[in-house]
Length: 408
Image (cartoon, rainbow, N blue to C red; front, side, top):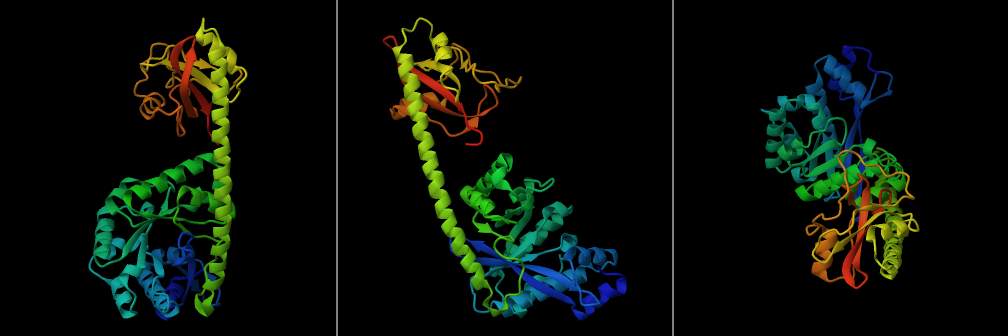
């Protein structure tokens, strides 16, 4: 830890910092796609100083701009020397947010790249927008460096009070998902949904996604399933010196991840196929029971059949014109049905013509329709609906079943 102002001044004057690089990989391309430059200070005893402590003291002594410039210079110089033979490698360079508004009249980062012959197109400037209150200065900074060919990344998306309007303003090339969302994601349903949403949003706006802080293979497999293109974290490699061809070990790790991913996706696909087959079989079994009834009271028949189908939350019947001819009948065997004030089931007489389980079934002429997971407006549960043609007496109808899907 830095003990006095003279020490931070000495570090800056003597360039007493070390630059390490943490690899960022692409399993889609089976290669190391880039490296993030990470700084460590060196105190008078030769011990390493964390970047948090380093910049904290620099702020106290009003030396942030000098320290940030030093870090940028050393990172670009070290990157140029250690990766001269790797033309496609990308440098991720952190920019301290407190100095963004001071950069309006300089081209320091560009000048450093020019000095060491590093193409701006090979550099990503990382901005943590949570710590930047001066939006106009941040936007001016981003536009200036983007015009010079640099890529822009927003760091720690999903952390704290991250504002989605910043994505609209900055139009980042890369989004880095905060490590707190990635940690143990394979065990947390809600984390999975948030990360899935962020990745889908990134795809819509044309940004790549880096999943930061991956430390377990299970985390990696889950975020890859959702579509993350790039990975960074201790499971892959800790920050390192890039000399002596040390990236070769990282390439071996990429190979093992790719093999694990193939097995994972194969198992997941097989599991999904089995689930869909089971779903269709249970629907057909339910449907045969319904057809075999004499049909005096369709709602009562549904209630009786549901008792033998514990996985089905509710069932209802629609006529050929798309009008619901029974109330939504809930399974009395389920104890966790919750009907909040915002949620209420459709009742007999409801018009279901615009519901996918009606119009998709009728327009495609398929024997059954199976929905994607969705939020049921009847109960607030995550559900899957399966529908298909049926008969009550001699009258053609459509049978619909809702199955709770959360966690599937």
